[in-house]
Image (tube, rainbow, N blue to C red; front, side, top):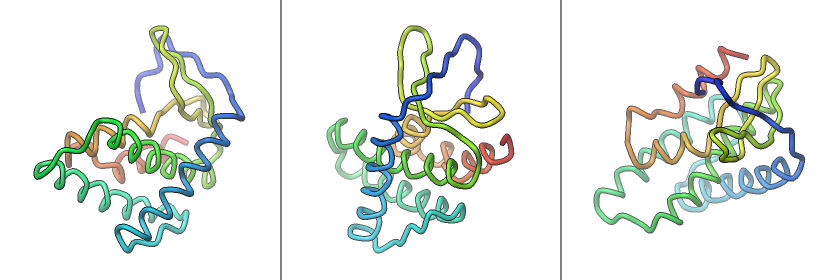
Length: 142
């Protein structure tokens, strides 16, 4: 979640379709590559945090190309967003900030957040960007 000053949200069903596909990819990657079952529950976000921790630690050994990092960020960010959307009232769309647009969610209380960026930060920056804590804050502000 970020400060909402000078931001605009536009509902976009195309974004919803794309993130649903990415979220399904996250379920497959978690199962096939990490042996973890993601079940769309809020507690499953803890499992995503564990996966992202592994990815962060692997960066220290062999950093992947930036596009690979964004692929993981889109998948697992979409999964986190979908868990939120399914358990709380939220809508996928495009957030515009400083003339840049990116996919994100708007809660029923008009809170805006963009989980793709949060996941990217978690993979690259480490523990201080914990996505389970992020999810809990999102859920508290519903």
